[in-house]
Image (cartoon, rainbow, N blue to C red; front, side, top):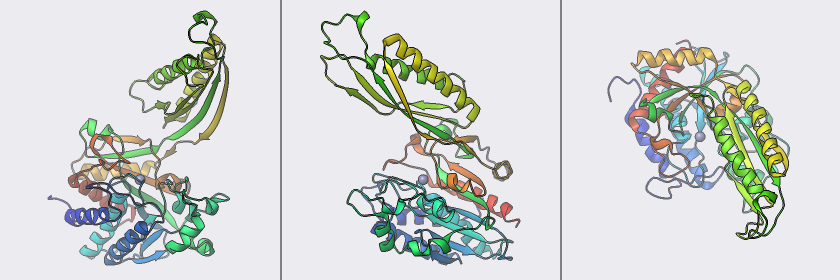
Length: 414
Ligand SMILES: [Zn+2]
């Protein structure tokens, strides 16, 4: 690969190296947060951070953080990073390219003998995925003082609590306080990540600029009808909860598609039917709703329309309805100045990078409550992620790392 400042081969070798830790198949990885595999990977990453000239620490929350002081160590830092923990049945790239890419940025500076004006920190955040203790973004929320009560007492399926796992890992709740970040310690957070969706591939573009992380609205909906014999109750007299639920599924699909080109997505991903027998009219159906959009007023409008639809369907079929709101998070927008900087840097590289929202959340979501943030997406094959088939080419990852490098230089005022 030519025209790159960063060392694509080094990036490729490091991705390969990490893929060996917790390897479950040719391309699969299982490296659960705070596991021995995660610990082993942290040591490898620590070595790379030191090689890049950073001072490295494992903080109380289990985050591995490298720091390059820059010309003025008292200035707010530019922080880069992501995570290296994985889902139980994962690929080699989710999170990992953001950590390896960030180290590559710093190592490239060191190779060129460039000292940035401000400090640069590289964070490999602890437990982004949240699959082991059922709550993610642990490390990044930790440094920002955003942990909730009882998080250390959450246990994994073997009964190991987070406190126990964290202590075994080298973290320590006693050190939480000193590991926290004060407001103003970091001015900007930048994250390189695979897209985990099909948009860039469909557009034929290697890189994308994230404009924001969409906020999910999560509901659990219960519809109550009346059970009866499937052979004898006439159609006009039925209170069939599954017919009602089906109309809502189709209606949500129509609502989420109603504005052509909008990034709105709506999903019913889980449904339970009671009593679940072929010979009984369904009496109770429980299902989930996931509605996401980067445009909150539009999402609010769709939410109102969805409520109206559910009430209409319930009335038409004689059903009682209960809606429980499980999550309602607002979209978090990337700072326009960072989006502009990334766009300009991409243009300098001869790339036209489309702007898109992120449906999944990332460490950046937590950082968005603390400082300006920006994200660069790398195209991934067929949009597959959280699966050993997850794949991004080294060419695309190298381009993404180069774009991260150039954006970082701008953000450091170098
Ligand atoms: Zn990730």
